[in-house]
Image (cartoon, rainbow, N blue to C red; front, top):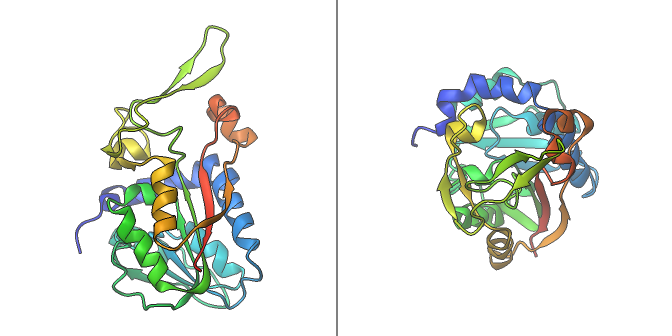
Length: 244
C-alpha cells in the first residue's frame, strides 16, 4: 500500500469540503437524487469507492444503506472514522486501492458510488473493472467528477470587459496527469488525471457498465456568487451506470 497524495492534506481537505458550496449545495444533493432514483436504500449493500473522509457514505448510511468505504489514504479514513454517524448499519471503512479492491468480494454489492474521485486515480480501466467485479448482476455504479470539458489542462476563468466571467478552454485532448499552477485549491495540491468524456464513457461501456442516466448540474446561488462562471458552464459530470 503506497502513501496516498491526500495523506498530507487530509485535515485541510476536510475543512475545505465543509465550507465549499460546490459539495454541500450541488454535488451531494445531485448524487443523492440520482442514487435515490434506484429505489429504497434500506439494507442495500453499497460500496463508496475512494470514499475520502466519508461525506457521501454518511449520507447513505443515514438512509439505511449498509456502507463499506475504501480509500488509499489512511489519514482520510481516520477522519471518516472520527465522523462516524449513528445509523442502522455502522459504516465499515477499509484501506484499499480502488484499482484493485483486494478487500472487496466478487458480486457482493447492490451499488457502488465514487464521489469526485475518478480523476484522482491513475488507472481508470482497472478501477472500472473493480466496480464491475464487485457488483451483483443488475447493480448500479454512480459517480461524479470534475467536468472534463471545464476542468482541463490550461483552462482558466476569464473576466470580460463587461464583468462577465467565462471559462476559457484549454488542452481538452491532452489526457494524463496535470497540476494547475494555482496551489490554493485541491487540484493545485494533488493534481488530477484528465480524460475526455468519450474515454470515460467508452471505458464504462467496454467494461459492461453502460451509462443509463447523466447529469451536468449548474451552480447553486452560493456557488455562482463564489465563482460566477458556474452560472454558464456545468460544475460536475454525474452518471449512473448499470451492470448487465
